[in-house]
Amino acid sequence: MSASPKKSREAAHDDARFYQPADEFFPGQAPTALTYDDVTLATQFSEVLPRETRLDTSLSESLHLPMPIISADMDTVTESAMAIGMALNGGLGLIHYNLSEAEQVREVERVKYHVHGLIQDPIRVSPEQTIEDVLRRVEAKRFSFRTFPVVDEKGVLVGLLSGRVVKDRYRAKKVAEAMTPRAEVYTLTEKQLGKNPIAAADKFFTEHLGIHKLLVVDDKDRLRGLFTLSDIERITEEARANVKPARDANFHLVCGAAISAPRTEAGELDRDRMLKHAAALVQAGVDALAISTAHGHTTGVGQCVKLLRKEFPNLTLIAGNVTSSAGVAFLAEAGADAIKIGQGPGSICTTRIVAGVGIPQLTALYVSAQEARRRGVRIIADGGITKSGDIVKALTQADAVILGGLLAGCREAPGEIIEIDGKFYKQYRGMGSLSAMKSGSAARYGHEKSAPSGVQQKVAAEGIEALKEIAGTLDAVLSPLLGGLQSGLGYLGARNLNELRDKAHFARVTAAGMKEASPHDVIEVKTSKA
Image (cartoon, rainbow, N blue to C red; front, side, top):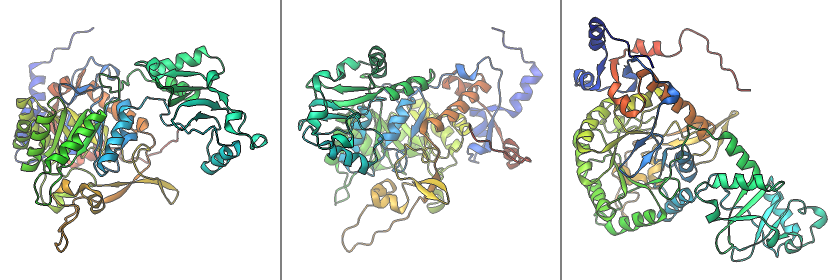
């Protein structure tokens, strides 16, 4: 390894005048507040290749993530499918709370009991059905497969109906007559899957030539899932060494959930309801709870954090949102492990326009980070990120970032696909939009979902409704973002996020500088992938 080149005294002086560390740069800009596009990072001498960098972080002493990205607790961004994808990529999904309490618990359970590649609730048939019944179902649902597990009324596996017999010529036969009996069906128990279910299934298919389906049962022989050879081969082929899933001590995927501060009719915090719901989420295995509001530096949020910290002393608590050192100190004293920073930077948030409050995001992060370091808590950059370079800049101050708009177009995001003029979109709305507040998020913005009879409800929307063009799978969206983050570390000679914070030097950028940074004075040609 070559030694770091010596920098002349004059060169060091020149650099120091124009490229400053955060503790010199941001105070020097005061009282002007800056956001991501207002600054750029200075390159540093590097012996680090992007592929050698590490992106792991932590949200508390007990919750560690291989990737510093969290999907937003928004009803058009994160439900179980998104949270599963985030955890498989090393991050964390925060299940939104515009659901009934029971529905949110079920969403968490889907994440915690997900096994990559395992179809957890395979379509099954009854032994008393006829092949004709099965054929009608295949046609009605347009299934692309014709092999089905056969279970009795208690869910116990009794056989496997092969696609070879799901044909018109056998339509009068009962499933019980046509199926492969239980004794001849290959299965593994949940315990046999161990800590690496994919490896166990892959080993099984290698050892059993010609078998394409593997059923998983519990210790009472009840059907728990199904592996297919094609899925296992795809997962094995697509596995990337630099992607490490985020799992808990029991090898389950990690999952977070946002909760609100429910109120009684008298306007008091409904302590019993909140604790009951939180306990149900904890029982389901949730790894982090986020007390998520537009204004986190309030009595109500402080009460919630204190109550949850007392009841669940070892649970990771995320609270917010704030944009000041005082707000960080307040929530840290209440018991929060990680604090969300950001008021109004989101692409569909109008808080700054409607309420006239909020701080440009990068200055808010710097100011908040000062108190966070003193308190030993983490901060999360929430909102305003539109590209991978913004993530690099955010992580010079924060421990993780929350993405909303960048993930809302993913196929894993909730909602149906909408076609307009040959293009495909998904709905994306701010949690402060009227429609979202009517669905349940009104408390997040200091309003009630419904008012008593005869009382006029005053609601000021702090978000809009929009569409996001379909962006493909979550894996496809995250890959370039993580690649850009690793490139940023490489340019600064930082091997990890701690070194990124230490080595970051900033310079102010003008509008002309921003124009220069983007493709310009050319006709851009987009080439399609083969």
